[in-house]
Image 1 (cartoon, each protein chain N blue to C red):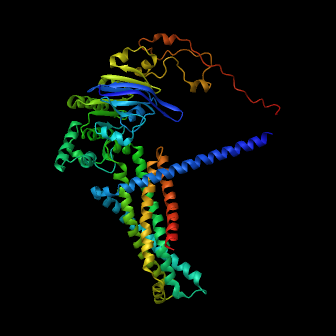
Image 2 (image 1 turned 60 degrees about the vertical axis):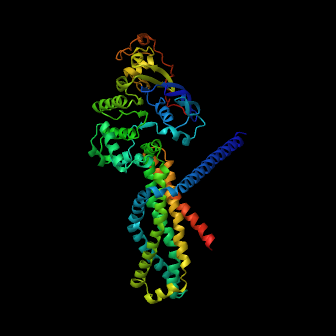
Image 3 (image 1 turned 45 degrees about the horizontal axis):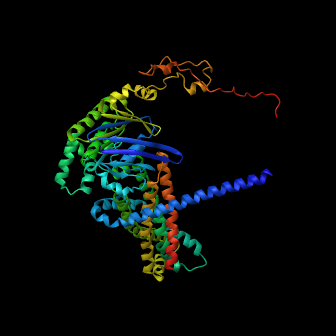
Length: 266
Length: 303
């Protein structure tokens, strides 16, 4: 008689746990949405503090160039190598350039660059905001009537929205360079075949969509970092948790929105 | 009467942090709120500056309600400029140097020219005893005392009427503590500021306070002058102001439960001195809850 009761109790306990987690998720999503709205509403105010935004463009964008360059060079090389391996004996190599170009421009360069950017920037924003919260700097801003969202988050979000597409354009160029070097040095395909193949199916809209969607990814990276910074609890452990969550959630949201954009554009 | 706190209540989950707090602060007065760590001082402080809002009760500034359960943070912004705050760790903005820390609110919230802002920064630094050369230093280059001074300079640069200090001397050495205390008094004299100081440093409180309020477990258990608190016959207040760990019992639970002391042979402390007016407590009979001896493994037949 006791076992059915235990079963009911454990099922009840699990349901309650699930409900609590669900409630926390919905609450978190609501807070995230509210932070996004508060950030977007304050966008026009950046005109008054353009210098802060420009300095963030440098630190978040320009300083990411070496990292993006490395990633993109190897991305192009790996794409060519894999494509050659998969196409051997099945698809003529004159389509190699088209395949590499399409995959790089539409998906690989935007998504991989955004992921790397999230790893560098979302964690940085989350850690900075969480540390400011721990050391009462956010309270000090509130007490001095200096809106933390306006002065901390909006400039970073605008900087990310502007600089991530720029980084993706650079990543496309570097990926093509890496691919061309690989074709020239390692793969048994002539450069003429590779380059002529690039032109076959080239469509400018792919570049526009690939680069354009990263503006949304930039906003995701900045706002996710800020959200987990603002909601961080505790000391060093809280900062660590905030940065981890920031990068994981940024990556998930980037892939989700990438899928949404792909559906819309198709 | 400048600031009045009426029946303030606050709880976090099941824990009641503030329980019917009532306080009155007059213009030009220095009020020290004292109490043990975890007694609710900081929560009360955060209510006064509008970083938290109560579950019950209200705070009035010149008879106008500024904080109640229905107040929104944006409503509090109207009166926020009347408050200046020195946080415990000064809360200077790490990414800015001293000058920028002071100039930030002036640039964003006032219409002063850069020349006027520079003059105000110089004046504020001078008031807290720092030279203008400090303007270019980063917060990380400053000592604890200097950080407190810069935090104070940033708070007074906006010329507030009411200054709040959150444990301003907790991380400072005795000499620097005295300097900060003098600074609080000089600001009161020079600018006629009303000051509310949250502290557990009883020496500082005696030096600077016109009035002291003691908070314990979320309740104000004393409100009066430093002289009156010294005369108080409340044993807990005496224990706190004399800085005694335990007035009646010489042994703490750790020793008792570690088995170093035989239960039943505990005696009242002879090390701690009795507080003035509460000697009778020392002779109070010591009572420990009855405790069963631990069950030891028999090592014999198992179940």
